[in-house]
Amino acid sequence: MEPNYTAQDIANYFLFKAAKDEELLSNLKLQKLVYYAQGIHLAYNGTPMFKDIIKAWTYGPVVPTLYRIYKQYGPGGVPADESFNPKSIDKDMREFLDEIYKAFGQFSATRLMDFTHTDKCWKDAHPNGIISHKSMQESLKKYLKNDKKN
Image 1 (tube, one colour):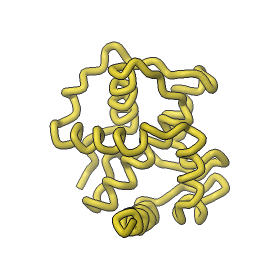
Image 2 (tube, rainbow, N blue to C red):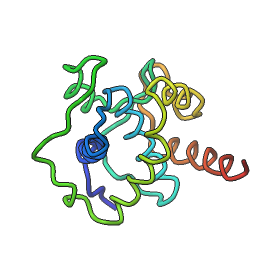
Image 3 (cartoon, rainbow, N blue to C red):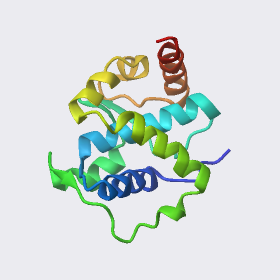
Image 4 (cartoon, rainbow, N blue to C red):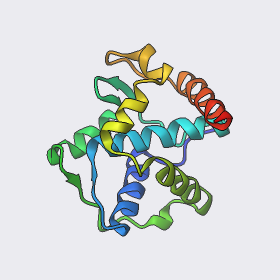
């Protein structure tokens, strides 16, 4: 099944959520939220949300296309896109992304980076390799199983 969204769509949704909470997300934190959204979607549904690649960089998983867009903000906050309409994302997907934001948005960018460094898919692809959908799906499935045991 062909993905319905781009990584930019997912990033825009998270930036919109943060702005509603009067917060700004750094590029680093945004990258991790997008990674977890893709990985957990794969783990639950077996299908990717977007086809943009994710690479295993030193500071964790990164969508290079997003990195290039947001690198101009350095370590500071990335502003939300004023023209983004959250309803461009269907209701079920918005609810899914809300859950990802609720679960992972509470952590700092550094803490999220630390979490991603324990994911097998990142370890296997580091340094700078592409994290495949299959490895992300398997890695995050294990993560979710372990999380449910606690």
